[in-house]
Length: 439
Image (tube, rainbow, N blue to C red; front, side, top):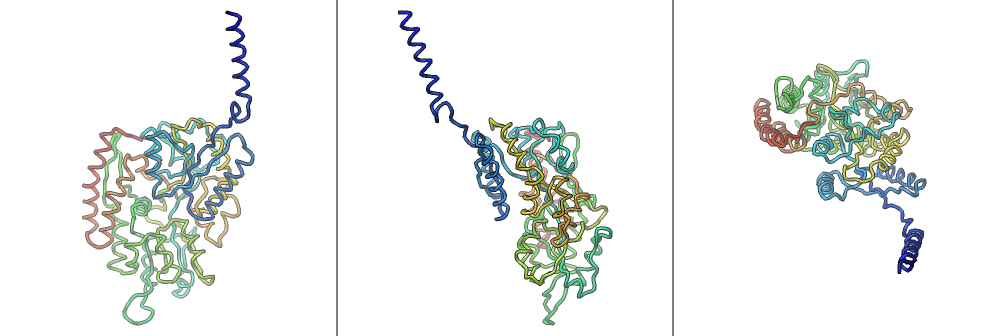
């Protein structure tokens, strides 16, 4: 009986081994790693897919599945996956949002996986947007979003206005003076048809927050371990300048109030306003694609208030904590964000690459499409004091954007807007304080 059992055991063992030797059984390859991308411009999507294909062609044992997402639905999608556990292994987003995910414990700390080359080559200001006080890294920054001022060279020349240079940047007073001179009724019918400037103020919190840093404004201050909102004189200065340009000087197009920056580009290309202020550097691509070949334009260095310091935001790749293959996912991130690929991504997204080695490439020093001025602005970029504020994105959507919209629409004054922001911020801050979430 014992001999029969022993034989049965041996047979069973051989059968088990044979099972795992059968192709498609024991040698089954792992399912692909999911990469959730938010690329949206046609050229950028093509580059993302090309990078994935290049990886897959040389890594048959570690394939990447490309998943196309959208910026409008990304937050809800990711929160759902974090809670259910059915997460993408790698996802693309931005620093101001992933800090909140990190505080909630959704993200893998990437600091143990970062190579010395990546660590030293990525700009310090980019690392600062994703690094927690305890040195945990919530994402790898690869593109830097910056604000620029675009101007119409032909209209400047017609009015004999000399544009600023990196050595001699404009102040806001210089901008206002030029805007007044460039605002005209060109047909003589009593209606202004050429404005000196256009802003995209529909959802203006990002513009206001990042630009206010040059005035010494921060909106947020930390008291102990908690954030508080303070809208004082330095925060009010930029708000008052914009209001005055719209309503007193009438040098800013009224269309600015209800439009996004992207929505202002056709008017800029058509000569309805001579400058487009506070648009993302990506707007240059849309100018190239939308304007006639005769349209001549340029990029200004950052405007100077107290300083030229502007807030930086980065686009990032992160790994959810519930991914079971963080080490393998980081291998792909290393490949996707090497110097060559980061340059490809930045050129197609028209944003500043986060790698120093990319900034030294001739493509990013070219003047024809404003790359030289845009990329030289990295020295003026800083990190806003609101980084890591629990609920920052909710604050922007529920407090800052609605109040600023009323302000720029002329329904309230700057002082009233300041009081509203102070008051309405307290409920949100108090709620997150109860959660005990800290950066």
